Length: 66
Image (cartoon, rainbow, N blue to C red; front, side, top):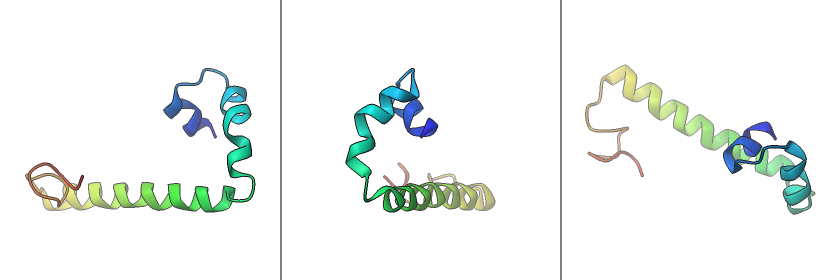
């Protein structure tokens, strides 16, 4: 939750929880899994980039994968 709080720029964590907690009551595990998958994708892409010394972004051409 602290990471989401920081990403959204909310000073108190209570603001994030009060605003968004009801959106994910049943899907909290799925949301966490998707965030983990996204973080793993970025980490693995960066690791590959650093390992190969790719000068053209993170494997997606001159501007990267996005």
